[in-house]
Amino acid sequence: MTICYEPMTEPALKKIEPVVAELRVRACDRCLLRFGDCRSIQSYRVTSSALRQQFLAAGVSPACLLDASAVCDLCLGILQVPEDPSCDHLINRLASSATYGEYEFSDFTLSIGLPPVLDLRNAGVAARLEMRYPGAFPGVVDVKDAVKWVYGAVVRGATGKSFKFQSEFQVDVLATHDETDDEIIQALSPLIRRVLPDASSKRLKHVVVNSRNFAEKALAVMNVSERSTLVPAKTTVAPCVIAITVSRQPVLITGKYRKFCRLLSQSPWVIDNKRKTESSVQELIADQVTAFIKCSDIKFHSAGREDVDVRMLGDGRHFVLEMIDPRRVPSLKELEELCLRINNSTDRIEVHSLSVAPDYAKEFKTLQAGADSKRKSYRAIMWTSAALTDEAVRTLQGSAPIEIQQKTPIRVLHRRSLLSRPRTIYELSITRINKHFAVLDLVAQAGTYIKEFVHGDRGRTTPSVGDILTCQADIVQLDVMDLHTGH
Image 1: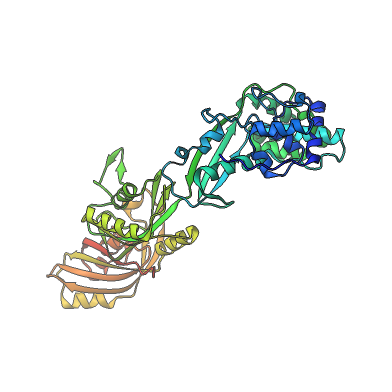
Image 2 (image 1 turned 180 degrees about the horizontal axis):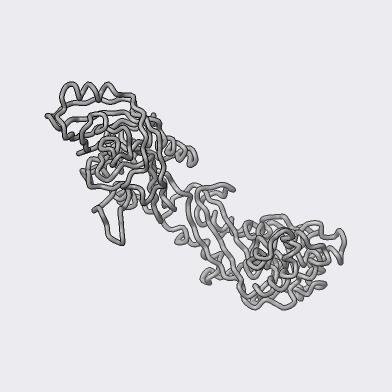
């Protein structure tokens, strides 16, 4: 990594020796900068040896400077940056291109998670300094800010990308230090009632004292004198353990699908660990997408669903593929190629109008609006026990619009609550195939159970086609022709 050097200010240098001499804590060079209120970002980015030389040249006693083999009490080693490029340290891991794998991104954000004990220790040192030197230490650089200053430059150097506070690509650095859990619990347990004065006794029993959230609340209720007791009583033996993860925000691929198969569920249909259908709309689409663009997981969302044995025709049904942690965002040309790839892989479905949704919330709102569309068009082949005479056809067609009452169908009672729902059949037309079979075209209110409207579901839907024709009626095939979503 190329280091840009910028000298530390003299006022900051003069504050360093009191921090060490009075507090008797082991503080690394960069933590001394922090408590000296040094806000020259480049000063934190110089090599450790160059920083030490600067201290010594400014007259800081060597006794005040921490040996490289010791662990800093105030950062638990995260700001102690070695210069050996072969050691397994955070700086070398972030500097390695292997950390960022196959991701393609234009900028990044850096998220830092630190052990809550650092909040306590740094607050304790700051309180001691304030009591010993009133007004001399008006500001202390937060350890998290210093970490970002140091390692943000490392990520930028390794990737060639710029840092942004809001970015689709995130580098997460999580530091933990289990050895100091007892220190936190001992210091903060007496404050539980003060931090949560209105909490019930039951809730207090489940408070996680050694969490960052509770530590922040506890510090807020402590006075300077109380905070001054948080200076560590013993030196730190082991540095914090650091985990790095990289990820990008989900990418939404939106489009429409048509379904031509009557043995295909929309999502995987599994009961008692046994598949009920060979595949699903979700799998036929998602399998091709994940083979084309690597991601950690994929979620399928749609504007409603059709039954397994119902085809989805017309313009198709709006769907969204939520790609979790994708390695890149597909281009428009790649989406066109992906569309062909899906359609050439199967004759059971067809997709079109694939695009990347730029607005996450808006896309799901549109999806929900599609599911809640007021009218839907269907085409069914139906059978009647009585012959379909001209008079029967006129009677049925003349009955629209029809106000019906539908109790929750028997076939879905195991997953839906028992309710009676009013629904409207707005339009209805019949084309006879022969005396007992006909094509039924209808436009119905969203949420209408079409199969039950035809056969009556043992009197649970009234009136039904069978009721109107005063005979038995049943549905042979059903297709969704239009969802009237306007999308």
